[in-house]
Amino acid sequence: MINRSFCIDAVLFDFDGTLTKPGALDFSLLKQTIGCPPDTPVLEFIETRPTAGRRAEALAVTERFESIAAANSEPNEGAEELIQYLRSKGIALGIISRNSLGSIKRTLQNFAAVNISDFDLVITRDTPVKPKPHPDGVFMAARKLKVDVSRLLLVGDFVFDIQAGQAAGSMTVFLDNGLTTGPCKIASDFSISYLPELKKIVRLF
Image (cartoon, rainbow, N blue to C red):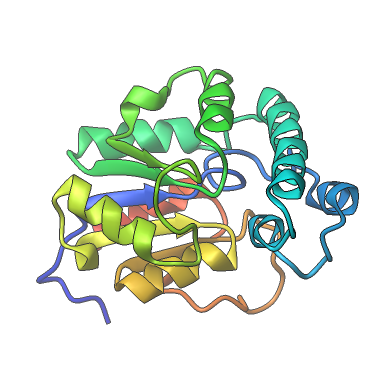
């Protein structure tokens, strides 16, 4: 049941596959290229490389893949209109991503009506904070946006997004991009298939 004594003061978005259409970055090919096991996250795998040189090499390959994906990325369905809508309601907006800041800036060049200045903060792997699924970035966002973390809504298309939000105590929204059939396997406060549906959630509070 929705507690109507609370409201949403800020929305924190994952980036790839959330604000952008999914599939621009071929994670399977990236993992094969750097020797990362299929069931191991890329950033965590890079951290396990035995030398600084090996870590730098794997990261450089990852950044090349991200650069290509950024150039080919497109706004997700309804993403730009949703950002404009939330801004018109005075809701603080942020991005929290495991990507580099450079790749996010490049991707946003492909947006027609939204740019990086439309977000009150952007947290990436270049930010000195542990990446999702750690909650540290969510806590940082709440501090910088000057909102209570319980009044922050985190929206993402991957389990790490939901885990980070839940661990921090924020509300969470899982976006399946219309690709999930049957019951959603990622337990979150809300589940949506398309970004415009987020308006209905915001209006509940």
